[in-house]
Length: 398
Image (cartoon, rainbow, N blue to C red; front, side):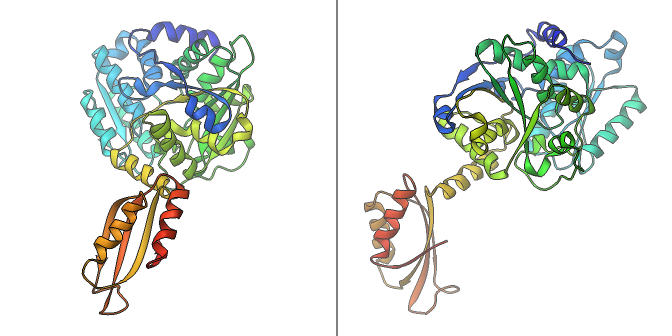
């Protein structure tokens, strides 16, 4: 069983190969959720995620014979890049099996570290089965992303640093996929001078750990922006550790994940992937659990597709009322577009997109339908713009 001393030993072992990332106090998020929030920026690792800690520690204890044979791992992205990078640093062959749905950016970045990438299966379970088959065939060491003592100890070094850099923490909110990070953090927190409560955080559609801890049948699946923690089968070791430390796992909605990604980007100026922002999502969705607390939150991954980030920001702006889509039924006469644009500009809003239809959607050949998306300061400003336009035109919201 992994103990606190194993995490301390791992910290010494990986020093110099893994970045000791900064811990910052976030005034913006603290004010937003009503607690004192410190963010541990493991997005600044070379591969953009905390997974380097466990991979570095696991590979560092390989025997000479094991290094000569090489390693194989399965991952949807961050563990893949971590194993690939640290195998490259040690001159070890690395074979990485990734599910077919893995985002292209993560596949490309993994290959850049010199690993051989194999796309196989529609789930992590199928990828893992294939990886074990390759391990047996080629006598490779299988490096599990979370169900491994050395990996768990390595991940726990994140919490060691966080607790040292932000004295007086009483709570941790840690994303949970397979459970390796949360388990390692719980062990690290057990050695703190004062008690620290560790919460795990899962997205609702993949709440396997929460279900396991309560004894409920595991039922997971569905699309999620937090693909890094979309795990069907949690690790047996992490499950046992979280049980032993009495850790509770909170679940968060897809919307809370999106809100967390946007809050980090807009207010804290930090880019995070969905899984990496899950801890902040818990603060947003479960504010009473953290009110008045001193909370440490790992921001543990930044590998988000640019298009996905842009879509999230726009979706949140639409929900907040900062983006508004309107439909105008207007007379088809010269100058009407310029007139509407001038009124929107005079109200202080910025037009983002315009679509003008005459043939297919207009109610009459003498009329046209206009769709406009504009940006406002906030929902109150949007409402004021709409009211000003409704004084002159037939306007409805999309």
